[in-house]
View 1 (cartoon, rainbow, N blue to C red):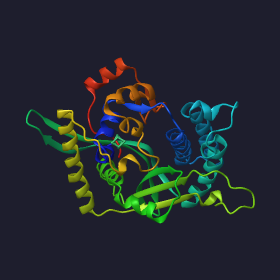
View 2: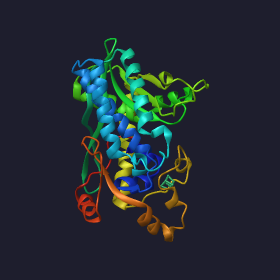
View 3: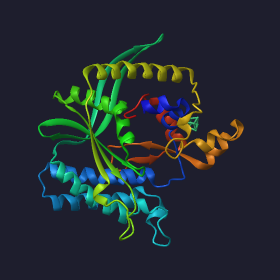
View 4: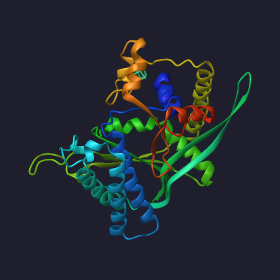
Length: 322
Ligand code: SF4
């Protein structure tokens, strides 16, 4: 969530402090969770040396269960057509099957799946107190390829996977954080990070020029020097210091920048393009409060106003991801 603060302080405040999420889901977050859960189940079984076909079936079962739970109702009803074919159950199953075939070719050895981590980054002194900073997160997998250990991050996207898109991961702060965190926990030499990319695209017409599903996947290996990891450490502490100051003052800058428009636009754009006096009303109508609990069976839980106030009293700042 550190990246969220860097993008826009107000977005961080709304999502992390106020736990606000839109009620108008387009299935983007849900389909990502569904695919992650299917892949994690398949990898866990492969880690236990379960034969591929059984591991695939285990992953598929998990993917289907997750789809029922995570996707908006309009994606699971048989009364109307699926609003986004790229995220239909049938299409995710098709992509999952091809992903398993692709992943088997990588000849990974799975060491840990969905591994949580928490590592001390030092402390920050403020006039009235000292903050102990703990960097926490969950890594999709730790795996070995050709004798080298990588932290793996699975990413799903509907955007075309171009070279500039892949190059962008060289700037990823989360990947550096995962390497630093996992090095501290595993006490093992970590060679680098691996981005496992899966493209969510609908099936092309028979005989057409659409990419075959076997080409929907890319693996992007990344390595960072000790100087780059040290820079990540000091830069992260600098941002956390700013989060602490913003929290103390309860003042959050609205970015009004490209952060408002990239990908499909910020989830809070309808709020911010309204006049300030009417924003509370937009929030009441179109947003609800929900936590994000990625290590639990149900990863996102709705939160009532009373629960939110209780959480606010005991919650920490910062977060587990970009
Ligand atoms: S719309 Fe822009 S200013 Fe508003 S929360 Fe999102 S990023 Fe920040």
